[in-house]
Picture 1 (spheres, rainbow, N blue to C red):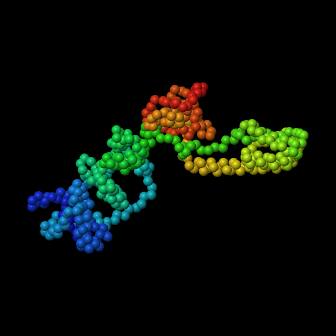
Picture 2 (cartoon, rainbow, N blue to C red):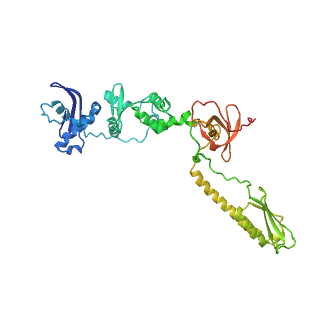
Amino acid sequence: MCDANDYAVGAILGQRVEKHFWPIHYASKTMNQAETIYTTTEKEMLAVVYAFEKFRSYLIMNKSIEFNFKVIDTKGAENYAVDHLLRLENPYENVFDPKEINETFPLESLNKVTHQDPSILWFTDFANYHARNFIIKGMTTQQKQNFFKDARHYFWDDPYLFRTCPDQIIRRCVAGQEAIDILKACHSGPTGGHYRANYTAKKVFDSGFYWPTIYKDAFELVKHCDSCQRQGKISQRDEMPQNSIQVCEIFDVWGIDFMGPFPSSKGNKHILVTVDYLSKWVEVKALPTNDARVVVKFLKSLFSRFETPKEIISDRGDHRKLQLNELSKLRDQAYKNSLIYKERTKKLHDEKIKNRIFNVGDQVLLFNSRLKIFSGKLKSRWSGLFTIAEIYPYGTAKLVNTDGCNFKVNCHRLKHYHGGDPPPLEIPDVHTFPKDN
């Protein structure tokens, strides 16, 4: 039963047994400024809409209620209960209590705001409001508006509080250890499957439970799950940042010298010989003269094929001193350009990887890159637990296991361990060294 006047609407939910009407629930509310300018018909329909929103928890099990109901106009004498509800005056309407703004807060108040009592459940205020019609004292007008806006999504069915979620599914509100147990059951229970955080939270919703921090709690649970940490592979994003290592590599150092003069053969009397000091690669060329001009021409050909070396070793013969100074300047400039290029490629590489920082004392898991040769695709490729004993330059770390043995690995194969019970230690593909004194 519904009714409306110029400033309020009222509704009664009840059951008709034979000719008698038995009330179950009473409800009324004051119209806002926009609703007061509705037409009479719109106000009557507003009362109907308000009644269905208010009593939805009672009507939700009747699947056809929204399709076969009838709107019957009733005389005021027969609808006196609803008519009385909408005529009740609101003594607090349009009452504004001005208060001075206090911009200084004592330390106790700040601590109370930032450190919430963990023993208080997150839905305590909503439960008190729906079960005992109790409202916290001292709330501002804005806080009351936000509270009532959120409270209309909850209802009390002793002994639990339920919430009507945006998908119009009713879920029970849980908190504390009960919420953690439900989350663990949906993640690592017999039907859990150790899915990721979003899917684990979805399974909790499908099970009919709700709490506001479910996605955050699911992420933390998956992050600290021992079985989940021991699954997965390493990718390019797990690589360590690039570092420029100045060591001697192939074609970095060349030795150069002339042989001859020899008897003329096709006009050539000298042989220019260059040797790479690392690979022992030899380049020779027969030349008619042994001056600086032919040396520069030969070196240009050499640099175009093997890049610019870091050093050229010779016996400093007088016939090559003419243009070697200019050649050295060109080589230095090319070396500087290569450093600039390496810095740019390092920046591009480091932007695509995760920012992972390993410190001495961190507990880590080690990726077994050779485990793929064994059968069983579900076998974990992460072994551990290990402790980082020392950090070296260029992304290398020394690990110590529970047996006291230590070994060095690249941090590309490591990831932080966040908790759990470690399984028996298995390291099939690393070489261990005796423990340092």
